[in-house]
Length: 85
Image (cartoon, rainbow, N blue to C red; front, top):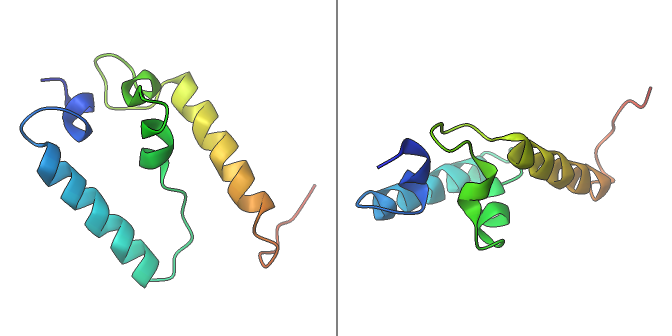
């Protein structure tokens, strides 16, 4: 099995999902702002399209989706101060 598919397929799926759930839970408990890309990728029905074929890193499509999600998050966060140059 390719490493990149471990979050969505194979024997480790339940463990990977639980690890992700706990990680997100801990981020929320700590009050840290974050954008969770897993549900964004999954809602397309083709989450592996955002990764290189034989590599666990995001491909350009994955990075573009992350940039858009981060942009939307920041645009909806009026309580945060950002420097605009």
